[in-house]
Image (cartoon, rainbow, N blue to C red):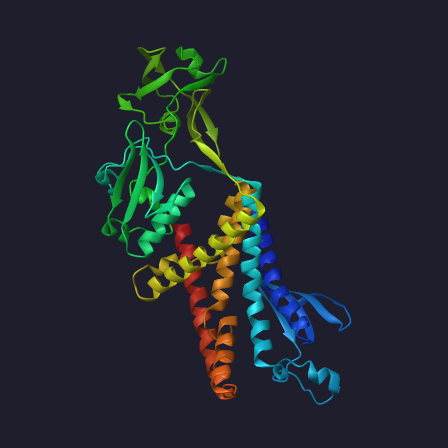
Length: 449
C-alpha cells in the first residue's frame, strides 16, 4: 500500500509540474501568435492524443513520463514549402528574438509562479510548525560549546528574525553556504535575551541534505516524560503507574523527554525495566515490563500509556498581501540557495552525492503525502522551484541554453551558426545523460545504505 501511495504521489506531483511548465510555453507561444502543433505530457512515442482548438493542436500523452514538450511550427524541423502566408507568419523562427525569449522563459517562470501561489496559499491558510525552542545540546557539539541550553528559544540568526524550527534550519543552511558563522539571539528563561555563536568552521562540514541542526548539536525541545491516560490492563497499569507521573529515569538512565521514554520502552519488549518517577513531587521506583507486540514485522515493547511527545507549536499565518510577499521571498531565497549548492558542487566544496533523482523524489513524495496535504503541497512547491532553476541553467537542450543563444543573438545582431548549435546540442545531451546517471546511482546507493 505504501509503494502504491508513493508512486501515486510521485506521478501526481511530477505530472502537475510538467503540465504547468509546458502550459507556460504554450500560453505565451499562443499570445505571441506562434502556431502550436503538439502539447505532450511525457517524451518519446505518443500513446494517446486528441486534437482541439482552432489550430487543431494535438494534445498527447507519451510513453516516457519524465518530461514533456510543446512542439511549435518550426522551419528547422518541418518543410514550410506548402504552408500558407498566414501560417508562415506564425512560424517560430520568424518571430522577433524578444518573442522567442518570452516563449522559452515562460516555462520556468510558470514553475516559479506555481511555487509562489502554493506558498502564498499555505501562508494564508496557516502552517502549524514547531517553535524554535531548543532541547539539550548534544555533548561536545558546536551548540554545546556555544553555550546553548535546554529551554532556549532562538529569536534571530545573523540579524534575521526566527520564530519556528524551519526558519532556524533555513538560516543555519544559509550561513553554512555563505561560509559564515551563525550569531544566535536566544530568549533564555530567567535570563532574558542572550547571544551565542556557532563559528564558520563548525558549519563548514555540515551535510546540507541531512539533519543540519542535529549535526550542529541543536535539538528540538520536547515535553517532559509525563504520563497521560493509562489504559486498563496495560503494562503501565499493572506496574502501578498513573496519569500525571513524571518519569525521571529508566534503569538508571535519565530521561530527557517523552520520545526518549518511548524509544527505551519500544526497545525492551518483555524485559523488566526499573523506572524512577515523581508522583506529586514524591520520588518512587517501580518495575515495569513492556508487553511484546509485533508492529510492521518487528517486535516492540508497549506499556499502553500516553506519553507527551508533541513540541510547542505555533501557526504561521498572514493576510493575502503579506502572504504573497513572504511567498516571493521564499521562492527567491530557495532559488538562490539551489544555485549556491550547485556552485559548491562544481567547485568541489560540496559532495556530488547531493544530486538526487526520481527514486529519491518519489520517496519524498510518498513521505510528505502520508504526513498531510500541507507537507505534500510544500514538497510540490520546492520541486517546482528546482525544476524552474534547472531549466534556466545555460545547458543546450534546456530552456536556459536556448535563452543563452537568444541573448547572444541580441548582443551580436545575428543568430548563432547552425553548426555551433548542433555541436552544443550534442554536448548538452551528453551532460544531461551524465547527470541523470549520477542521480540514479546516488538514489540506488541511498536505498542500499
